[in-house]
Structure formats: C-alpha cells, structure tokens
Length: 273
Image (tube, rainbow, N blue to C red; front, side):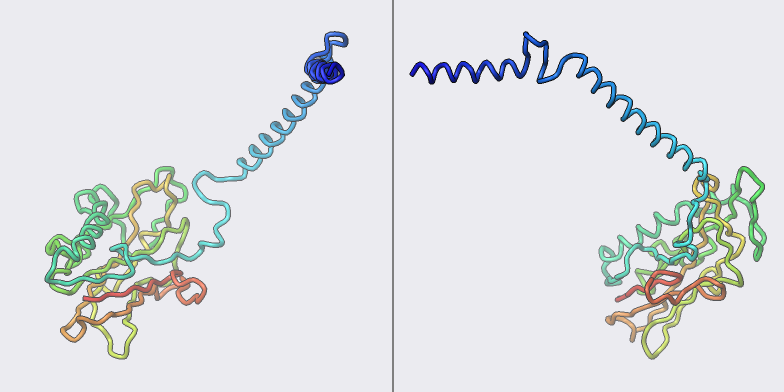
C-alpha cells in the first residue's frame, strides 16, 4: 500500500518538475535562455518569410496595370448574351403575370440608355473607332434607347409580349481594347426548315464601331455597350411550339463558330408563346 502511494507521489512530482523545476530553473524542459533563443529564431525566420512575401507581391504589382488586365488571351473574342436574362422564354400572351418578369428585366436593363441620360454623352460619328488612348478622362458615345424603336419600351411598355411578338435584346460582352474589323452586326436564325420573320433595331442589327474600344470599368465608368433588339414576328402557325433561335455576330473578324464554347460570338435560346 505504501509503495503504491510513494509511486503516485513520484509521478505527481515528476509532472510538476517537467512544468517547472525549481532546482534547475527549467520550464517545460528548457531554461529561460533556451526559450529566448528559440523565440528569437522563429521571430527572425517568420520575419524573413514575411519580408520575402511582401517584396514578391510588390514586384508583381509593379508589372500590373490597374486599368487593363495583363493576360487577356482567354477573352480576346466576346461572347453574346440576351435580355431578358433567360434562355427559356415561355409565356401566354393573354396572361400578363406570365411575362411581366421578362418585361421588368428589359425595363431595368434599359434604364441607363434613357435618352435624358444619354444626352450628356458624345454624339459620335458612325463607322469610326472612338480612339481615346491619349485622353485621361474617357468619354462615352450616345446610345439612346429610342433607337430601338418598337423594342425600346417607350411606345409599347410590354416590349411586344402582350401581342405575342416579343423583343429580345442581344449584347456583346465587354472586352477591353476590342476593335472589331469589318461591319459587325447581329444576325439571328430559327433552327427549323421554314424561316421566321424578325425585325432588327438598330437597322440590320448593326453594332457600330464608334462604341469601340472599351477602356475598362475605371476609365470608362459611364460606358454603355451597344445592343441590338430582335423583334420576333410570330405568326399564328408559330404559336404553341418551341422555337430554337441562334444569334451570331457576323460581318467581322470575331469568332462565332467555336464548338467548345457555345457563347463565343453567339447565343442560343428558346421561345414558346
């Protein structure tokens, strides 16, 4: 019994000595000078790593332009998107609740294009790039929503949805410095044997060169990209059937037939009224 008590006391004493040994002055097996040297080593070591990381980041940041991405090879050609923001547009023209969301999307998207706001921008000449490389404050060319005529939402607040001839807005994604050659325009086709009548606004689906190049979000803060409105002139035979429509940017050097990227220079969506 006495041996067991002595062993328990020795075990407890050894733990106390490990934490702090008053005879040698050691704390957790090390003296104060040993702990000081270890602390100094790690302070210098991690301080050196932090300095190297800071220097590396500083050198890297010196090579970057705050307005233009350094590497843009993956986005050299723009993709196409549509508004309303849906690739499946289905509604009953006699039930406003089914298409009101599409109308709201279009109205919200066109707010920056209001004629009253665009009056403050530059009336740029057609067919010419609006070069501003040497200008610190970049100006913006006018694009008034009234140019979209029947698809502007001004004369017809339902954008044609109430009459079963909906408007679709097609836009190119912004790419800094893009200068498309030729005469870029949007062309849409329906994927079936018989064609579908469509109207384009601006006329012929034109994407004028005056809206290029784009200089980036910081330099071109008020920039509005050109859009093309496509009015689908559905006839009675076109109703109650799903139509697959493909829109492409054509007439220029922009890519629109890459099978690995369905949105590069084109967009496909479905409409059922």
